[in-house]
Amino acid sequence: MELSLYRTRWGTSGNLADFASEAQSAGFAGIESPVPASQHEQRELGSVQNDAGMSWIAEIVTGGGYVPQRGLSVHDHVEDLCAKLEACASFNPVRVNCIGGLDAWSHADVLHFLEAGMDVAASLGLELCFETHRSRCLFNPWRCAQIVGELPEIRLTADLSHWCVVAERLMDTEMPTIRLIAPNVRHIHARVGYDQGPQVPHPAAPEYAEALASHQRCWEVFWEAQQAAGVISTTMTPEFGPDGYLHQLPFTQAPVADLWEINRWMAGEERRHFTQWRNLPVDPRPAGPRNSKQTRPSSGGCATPAR
Image (cartoon, one colour):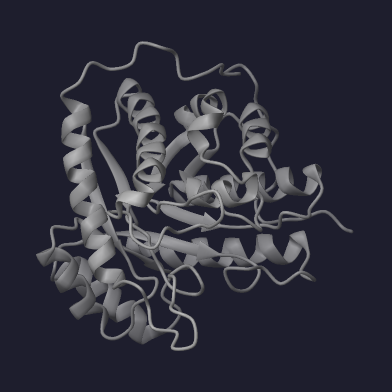
């Protein structure tokens, strides 16, 4: 199994071609960015794929920005997801990462949203991964584990930094849950969180060495499960970003570090970490119980029940 690293578009601006060229020079296999909304953005992405030969992981956010609009319904989120899945299908993404749904929904609404997305993605031939993102459907590890039990086909993007904030602890303290969801993880966001925040000031800082090691222990569990499943290339996106994630000095609001430098450092560290892990014996312990006989009813595509 090989490691393919992707550069996040989050926290950057400017020409997509220049962004992708910089990523390629730094050894990234591709980019992860939102579904292009305009014809100009579509042409840019097509050029990056065809001319630069870089692969693409699509990012879909439902219900507004990264924090969803509280008043939108399940139907609104499903329609948003369906439209964006259809928009990205022609670009043949490696996979689609979805930051979707709402943490305040009932369990039935969460299942409906996830099933609808899974059905539409399957009909379009897309691999859809739902991100473990706070304020969203999979905002804590225990709800995620429950959903995996009920929807065993669901695929996940693991961003454990969010769970560190929600649970106020590092996630290697929850290894039974990490092992249970591991067979469903197809993509990893390599941002290092800690017990009081989703992003350490710099992952190379010695005072955050244990936070980095905790995430890496969990990522190894995901790699073990992927390797056991015959995955040829595992994908990871270093995803340190702005918007309150990047620490700033008081009064001046000067950033304490440079995001591109941090994400390049994280990429280099995970190349080293993955190489070291690959040369070690695989942990023989099972990844966790699976309910492989359970099936889910079709949700009927984009349709949502009357409410």
